[in-house]
Image (cartoon, rainbow, N blue to C red; front, side, top):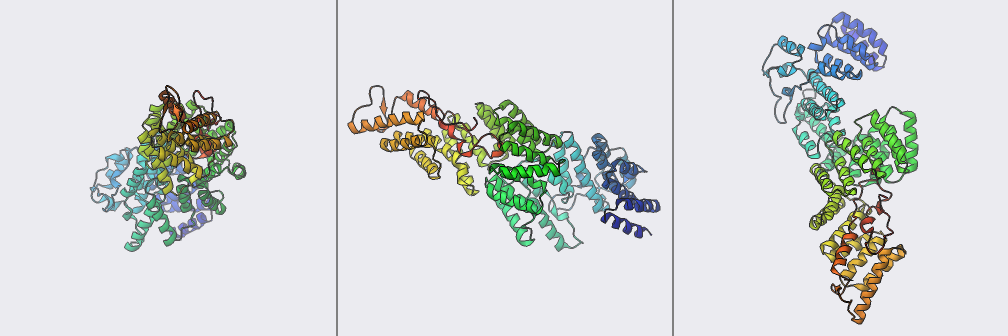
Length: 631
């Protein structure tokens, strides 16, 4: 009869006939009085949203104290009801670290204790007082072990809701170390960036995947262990060990036919996005949404790509669809906020980013978008406050620290900018956008050797990532200016010519090239370059003044007439006093700007204009016509 009722209950559950399952489950529990049957009856109530009824049922007898599955479900009910402290009291505040297993070894053994003693410890809430034994691991079967891991996960959820993120991180880590199949905990660690990129990889290596058992078959178990590790590898940071990430995705695609799986495609899109290959990333996220148009995990990257590529019409349609069909999802209002940010309606964007963050206080993209709206309006203090909140919530990612450094760079607070960027660099050493920002700071600090090194490293990594060369024109221009000030004029000239060769016909670049040509004594070539600058911007005062100087120097070369007392001719080139040269150098690089990692930052209008304020003004020669990207 018992098996008949269990089969009946399972059929009802499969068909989502919960009232029938409750009817049958109630009779089964009355018949057997077994904890497992009580758990399944409470589980059906939980599925229907009757959390209070499920919790009340579990309070009968010693179900919560003696049965891990019942204790897990009772705590989960408390969390669903918003009773966080009650859930922590049920779970206990200590993790069962004695159940953690290291790779290449059997699980830690525990010295035998009687079950009654174990129950007494649990009743008193002193779960941490359990004595390590040698047989308890054998006693704790696989099911109970998984519920122990599940309770570590719930404990982490409680701490996260109380904003104790360090304790939440430790709970999540222990949950996965106890049961490597506790993906909920692993996903929280990765999604919320609770660990640095290096820490993520070390954590992966600390997991004992050999604990996975498939039908007591060693061969199948070993394959399942490697498969699980490969899957987890695709979720790690894309800034660290991209080769291993690529190998993992290739293995899953070729050996397991997962090449078109949404999670694998999203991991690839995430990597492409970090490499600023937005068109390719958008193609992958679009493929995901074509088969599952409400895949909310893919939404942040998809929205960011649409924003970066200025796809405002698709953004409009998507945001309206999501707001109409899923108003309870934070991603829906994130989409609305991104659309308004794309159309430069900053106040509206801020309102919807704020709404998304209020719906889910741990939703990273909403917090970052909220901060970007202040940065877009030049409200640096508010932006810094919002970025600081993001940095506190998402301690494992370097992006909030990068944005804080960028804001302080805007405010000309170089020591603070340097400190934030150094912190970001400690978390991620391979982000070319971060390296560019550090180069800008070094440039301002007159550490030109370090600035040149950072700009070169940024370009080398971007080239290795096969990023769009046009995206890195700002960094190449920054490098050219740093080389000029560093005295490497030939290299600077080569860098400026490369910028122009890439199709960026900008008056400021032509003017800077003309200046370098004058400094190396090629005055006629400088005249040509400055004419090209004026062809692009006929009223540019700096190019006009430089052209006059170049013509004078060229005439002096032709006639052999000296530039006059108090002036110097460097290699037959630019005729200026030493003080004028110093002032010229100071002003031509005095407003070197950082570039932006993507347009989701919302701090500029067009990528091609991000670095133009490098030659924004020229003291003594009138104001430049170049428009600052932040203006």
